[in-house]
Image (cartoon, rainbow, N blue to C red; front, side, top):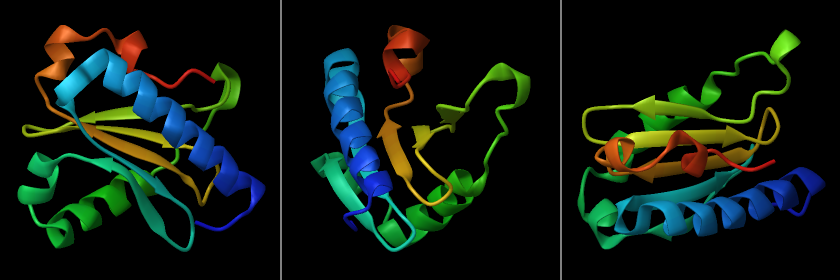
Length: 122
């Protein structure tokens, strides 16, 4: 990752989310990935996530997912979005237009963890 202030913020958010989601989800946390305009960096990835769907099939979906930017408008700043798929929950927490954090979780987490435990504290 580059050493810009935004990347440092993404680094801090990735570390915070890793700790928060590990506490809330335990083994249900599959991966935490930081990204910026130039690169991605894996903060955490379980063996199951490594052995599952090949990265070349996952990355295009994550790129499209993280490319969507809801506007804050009268509701305040957008802090995170959770996408629910049949085989995975994807939490996307953008920091800037070019940087943010993506976490993937077992879909069963949706029935056992409250939403407030999944969202980043900002």
